[in-house]
Length: 348
Image (tube, rainbow, N blue to C red; front, side, top):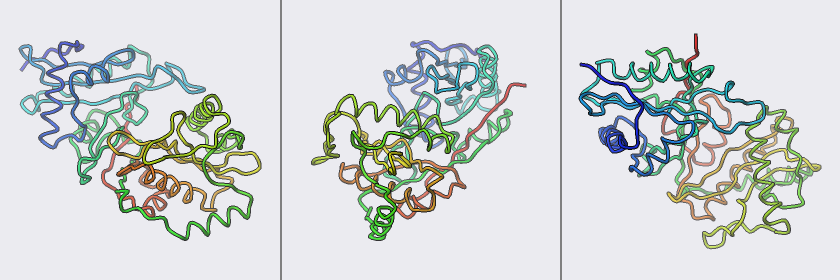
């Protein structure tokens, strides 16, 4: 069989959407199907490239890659990877080299752009929603890599990609969440050390560079910078309520922090609720200089409590398979639901 590999156009969107729907219906992918409008919004535009494999004008495969268009401190266009979003091949076209041809086109694109590597990871600017197995249709807003139980994982291994890390996706039904009274004991111990834990308010500690330096994360630094700036700009004199009857007051999102002597030494949030009912947050971070005190445990459970107050039905997250923080998540009721691999292909 002979296939034409070419850049897709907006006119190809219906076929790409149909292919994605077909593979979802067959149980081969977890990605939630999209409509044509959503497809164009996610897969086209600056820094996004889609390629199709066509036989007699019919799309038999689709691959997509994306690049960052905004950068954290120390990043640049040539230092950041090209992100592989997905590779889909119609069942009738498998074992004919379609997937390989599409991946080779993405590899060529990587060379053309001067990128150091291709990565499948959560920082892909195309956030693909996927359905959590065994969670009654509940979803997660971003894929952390390649689903290890899917066909894509062994395929990418065969194409020269390597697994750089393994992530576990975890899920909790918030209707079953309960605050553990032992957390009050931890809060009292922290208070005895003059460590305050709660919702960040204007006028509280604002220094977080020490924590971010010790953690080694420009991402967390950027999150804190943006969220605190939003509070100072929009509600500088507020004592923020979190939720009233499941409605968040207008303005910035609440941020939960641990503070000591004018320094932020831990945070989680911002607290938000997606339309799907998911309690959304960007992550959790604790200054390693203050480890072993239960700060992360308290912050995470406060976050769950705020999600409940917000009327969220569930929450989900992903974390490293060897990350000790899994203990915190499990004690809060989270259970593993899927494994993902962060993968990379490096230019020779």
